Image (cartoon, rainbow, N blue to C red; front, side):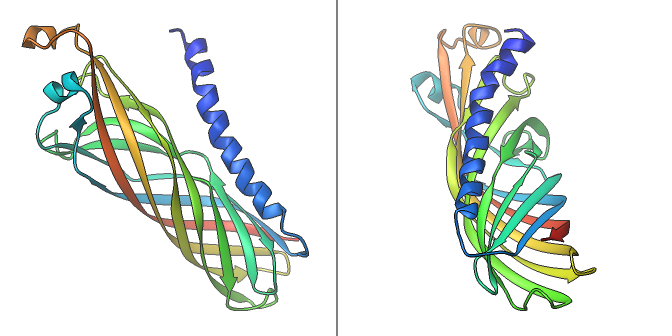
Length: 248
């Protein structure tokens, strides 16, 4: 498949991911009776903690290929962050949180090259948070807490051929939970800085498809076919962000 076709094949996945972000944005904008709005841009650091039972066989051939104790986790990543908050009451606001999908290293764990990079993936997790502010908009300092749903889409999963050759991967899309605590400092009547500590939780499944008709699998005596293996992961992300915002 040439680069153009690869780009076209990724478009439906990316389009579906952004359509869910647009849906969340529409839900935020649909709330009427509010005037105060905030648009923020900045950076976010994501530190994942992954829980998984390890790589499992999903068909008979996959069970032959899966090795006991093989597991994986994710490395940290940073990316651009965009948020839009729409006030729904004096101290309540709906905040849409989006950003560029960060690229995470897939890191071996258990008996599979522990601590070594074995691949990479991108994860888009737009969230819609209900925020409670502990001070009004005229205050210099405004602490807040927020909680709400997120939608996780994993794309561009790459597995190092040196680890498992002739393998492609795909991941499902799942809803999860996001929360944060933040502190906003008003620079002037319109501009403000916000630092936030966040937490997200989501479960995703990744399916690996391996062609065992090619070396080294045929040399190991495996039957020719498609071996399906999978990894079900619960990702607990701790995030730290800093944004510059404009209120209007």
